[in-house]
Image 1 (tube, rainbow, N blue to C red):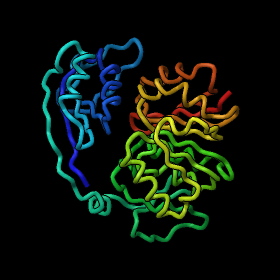
Image 2 (image 1 turned 45 degrees about the vertical axis):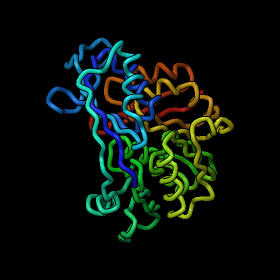
Image 3 (image 1 turned 90 degrees about the horizontal axis):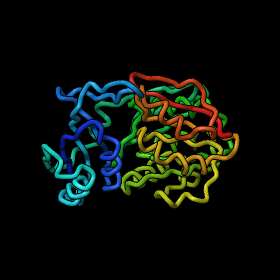
Image 4 (image 1 turned 90 degrees about the vertical axis):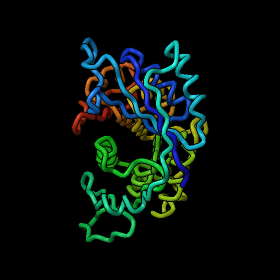
Length: 293
């Protein structure tokens, strides 16, 4: 496993969306927003005043990323070098050991279980078990957004259907969809390590022949019966045209990675194309689910 680059910076809150998009374009693997006291920053709803005017960010990049290139891209957005800029190289950590230490089998919905590789717990009759290692990417089922998506998948009639998982991470949602009966799952992610982890986890669960791993742009021919995207609200808004184009008429759609207060902007980006159900909530996170018109 290679080391990774972490950069820290401060930005004005009104530049947050533009900076998030620039960081994604620069290849960011993860973005963490912090307030002045290091607590998680929840974005305000429409018409509300943000509690913090300055946002601190910690951003993770692949190890081969040139920090000066990232800094230059952000300077173009901010009109100058980002304040409080700091660079740190993170050495590899033993993800497999951390996985075994911190994770345990968990149930989602009526049938679905996520089980760490190496565990063989007694499960109820009819249970569907996904045996998963984190590999080199995020997505274990422990985060609220992943849990919401897993519960949604468990509730859908996936047997014989085509599923698109956009932003697949470790492939937990893709593998779960295949094990719940989907005939074909297209797992899309812009991170090569995430695509590798998805392929390995699909093979480990015996569903590799039904899980197609793709980079963005390689899924243009897909018309899915169900679309699930667990990303970030700003990215969902930006990807709305692509996601709508990939979902057939009458198909199911589930979007997560949405904080309270962000749901209206996401729904408006899909205005007229999706009939939304009331949002589902876990902690401060929401899942929007609906049917394609």
